[in-house]
Amino acid sequence: MKKDFIAVSDYSPEELQHLLDLAVALKKEWKAGGNKPLLKDRVLAMIFQKPSLRTRVSFDMAMRHLGGDALYLSPAEIGLGKRESIADVARVLSGYVDIIMARVFAHEHVTELAKWASIPVINGLSDFNHPCQAMADALTILEEFDTLKDKNVTFIGDGNNVAVSLMFIAAKLGANFTLAAPEGYDMPAQTVETARGFAAKNSSQINLLRDPQKAVKDADVIYTDTWTSMGQEEEARIREQAFAPYQVNEKLVAEARPEAIVMHCLPAHRGQEITNAVADGPHSRLFPQAHNRLHAQKAVLVYLLGEG
Ligand code: CP
Ligand code: NVA
Image (cartoon, rainbow, N blue to C red):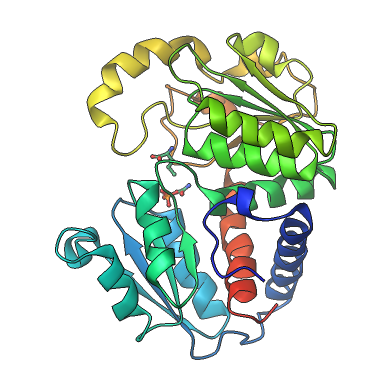
């Protein structure tokens, strides 16, 4: 069993499948009337260096549904690495709560927390990746197509944190992953190589393209995210120009398979990376996907706390 949940790449396909099976079971149980109090009296500390709607509320509700509780610690309260060193925060919290979730800027901040904490640490988004999002994404794809194996998952836009985790989970679970990004917004070459290593074990492919039209041909999943991630606000203008040809609109979606679904981790910038017509159209799975954060994270919490 792993102590932490920091990156999809740390988990084997079998472990990821186990988490997804657990998520499916917990979702079914909850829909049938409520979850068993598997995490009774357990407390999650949620550290945020950045804003959040989904991560904050879904983790809080996940703990409540499972009989536990959650504490929200805002950027101003903790001052992670500023008011107090990360190592000290980790060691102090380890004596108060049962598990930590942290949303950070630098990925090293969450790995540093995990290094010093004697309790499990979950990455609630870093500049490098967003593994909780990937779990909810995989659950959503599974619900739609029954499997990820041989599905074509295409990400249109920035090779960002969300794209990296999606690529890892696709590669681990046998989906083909394609990124269409403008020049200068690719993923780090080393990260792509790592994913290709995982994909090779399943004979699946990782493709890097520039042309969004080509990228969505045969896509089962079209995925997009903001062009400007948190922390990159100063680049917003220049990014809007670079990404303008990468909008997920009805014309682009028409190039994919007729049964293709459209996904977005949210928050969406309607009129930029996605149009209203697509976000609210028949291919969209944006809200079931957001709701699956709750179920996927319950599985991660239950697993790390030794209850599943
Ligand atoms: N998708 C996601 O992580 O949303 P929040 O930033 O609102 O948590
Ligand atoms: N890529 C986005 C995801 C937000 C959930 C960001 O990091 O801001």
